[in-house]
Picture 1 (cartoon, rainbow, N blue to C red):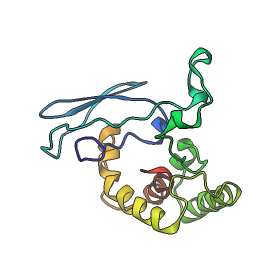
Picture 2: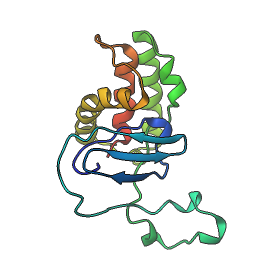
Picture 3: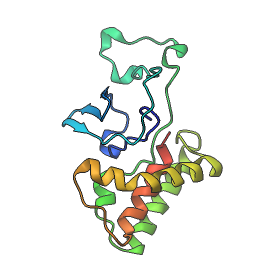
Length: 163
């Protein structure tokens, strides 16, 4: 969330550190593949900054520490499904295969997902479905008029790790 609005960058940026500069008209998000500007949909002022420190495995060796309180904002992860796999989904059978793999991942790692309970997952799924048009717009893609199995699968995978 940035100034009260969701900024969807896509799963390829999940777990990565980004820099966000907010102006009166747009947040500018700096990610590893460049700067993306997002149309601002709220007029909320920036009141506070909440950011997490990268986990130890993402820090250079000299900056690592084992203090469990050092990662107060550490969150869960997304289902172990790669974005390239979701891009290949075109049928209900493709989507079902991804869902089966998500279920296997959840059973193997029941508390690692950000949204591992039904209530949290459904809350995040609603948010993910509402954010899909913005995700497509931020990627420079057209949002399809008719829903696709790929969109359905994107929303499901997004919901596993969306905060």
